[in-house]
Length: 199
Image 1 (cartoon, rainbow, N blue to C red):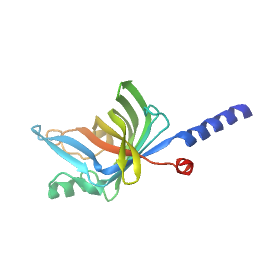
Image 2: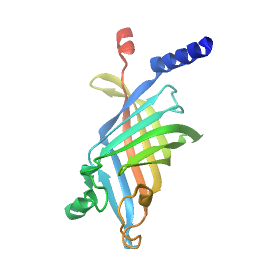
Image 3: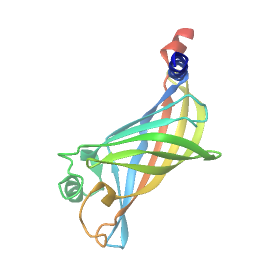
Image 4: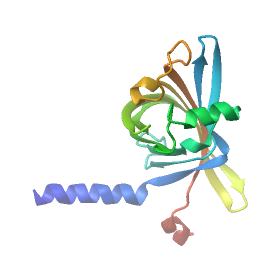
């Protein structure tokens, strides 16, 4: 039994030593969504305030853990009246549930640069599992004012039902139940203190 615990501890220590953190470049990222209105047109929106990071030990991100948060009060559909309605108790109830969160549980390579990511999304006080499609671009090494920096791009898409999260009771003929998620983000690898010490 002691041997089992020791092995687990060594594995955890090994991951923490070699895992790299990638931080989102908010100037080159967007967390958006699309929903059908009156069964006629698509209304696009996004969250202006958000944060995200990726932790991975494998260079192909096959063991990646993705974490994201968004401020519901920053919702933006290019219509202030609609935005206030969405933030109100009829939909997101941002005063009561101000934060949307996601944390992945698995990040599996499907083919080449394409992945399936599953995780828990918490919205409107409800947590549900969702599965998303991810396309990776890079990583590439670029010049920056701080020297060489490694970057990677992620395109994330998927769908969910707002009814699963109890967001809004509007009839689906007015506001569609299925929400299309669309996120694009550029991430930069963070230099660890260990690496800096070696350099």
